[in-house]
Length: 452
Image 1 (cartoon, rainbow, N blue to C red):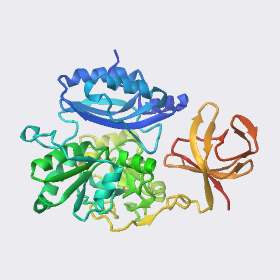
Image 2 (image 1 turned 90 degrees about the horizontal axis):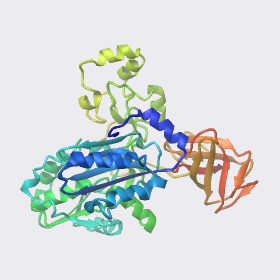
Image 3 (image 1 turned 90 degrees about the vertical axis):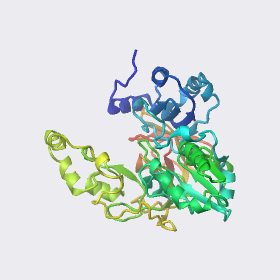
Image 4 (image 1 turned 135 degrees about the vertical axis):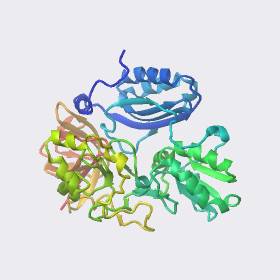
């Protein structure tokens, strides 16, 4: 009976590519009384491993907190594994705005004391007495109320790349740090202000809203489903996004774009940028913001010291690391002295830059282009991409650009294509198009036609 991973991340990545099947990144949580977390954990692993579900999951006596990647074809079967448990029947699954087949490469389920480290003694207050849940429309409306105070209950490296307009963004590294800070800052507003809070998927606010009601705040509200659900709702309902920038996520994507605003800087050169990276030095792994130019020059490293370390023989690197803590326990995320342009906790009033879909400052490509559509699938063995044409026309001989957070920016000329299964010279809106590609594309990738 297999209860743990037997494949490395690289081996799993290769299998995913060979399968060539669409995967969905999603998250969910539930507070519930679980008598035997270890048995619960093992039962989940057996069920999910059989469905090729991957992810990072924490279970405890108080419930479950999960971020996962599931094959699209197994989505309903996966949902059925949740329905077995009364407390997860009908549970909301927050499906990511941007998909990446490599968002998770292992199935890791850990038993923890708590599903979120909040530092609170749950016996001292009623954790079920939560704040009022608001959908995207209601959240937008309450933000317009001058009597509202909105608080971001995420960490500094999350809010640095994206946040709601006018939000208080504590300069903290952990959720537990923010609770006493906000309580002290807002102690004079308990009676008459709307305390409105949000986080990535909602789980931190479930506990925070109950805690602040216990602290005497009369009007407590929280964003239902967090930023992930908000982004989905504003897209489906055509609402204005009060959130600007990118939503940081805790998987290999490290973020999904909500608006085209870039509100942060490359920590190494100061250029407008909101792409996180982990230092390539295995003795560091510092999380920081790095632009493409610095990434190339520094080889994914945060400092010259780390860069020099990566060039040493592996045996020597291991010897130098011996007896030391890994970097993510030594350094504060994004706060190494080696980083010259660090703005966590000092968010600007306005975006540093605004990026439009046809002129993304993160791209080195200075071309005029029009959007054609989005990638639908990539057939690994045949090396063929499938695209849905949504706007404009595509012709054989056109120069195109395929762009995505993982794919990067790839240009090529369409020499031959199939439209709705038949070889043709032109595709129009509504058509499905396939053509050979020497690189993999993903569902979040966009297809452009270069016109000059």
